[in-house]
Length: 124
Image (cartoon, rainbow, N blue to C red; front, side):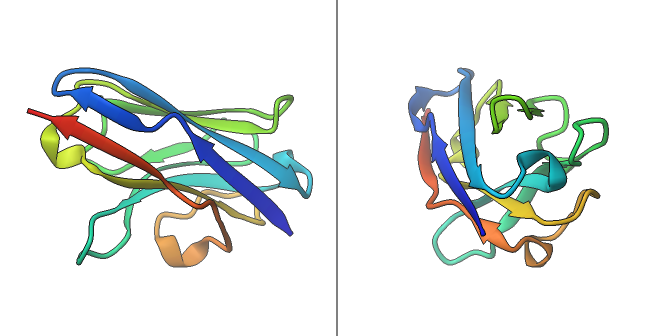
């Protein structure tokens, strides 16, 4: 079992930045890939970016590439999502998720464990 807890969400003005954290516990953190996702009511869960077990391989959805940065610190059992140049359309509940394989996954269905989510609201 893997437990994930997101933090760092909140209200920010358009153009601002936020960094989300995902603290993991349970299985050995360096054995699994992590992804960040978001969901808006009425819409499907959207993958944003993912990172492999070591942090050496990342994937970004086109709409966030160049604005968001995913990283991880295996010594601290924590993954991060740095979000820059935020837009009102980035408003959503943000989730981190883990899959118990080394490689990145690019769809939400590939991830087995999920955090509870953290709200990010970007005002115009």
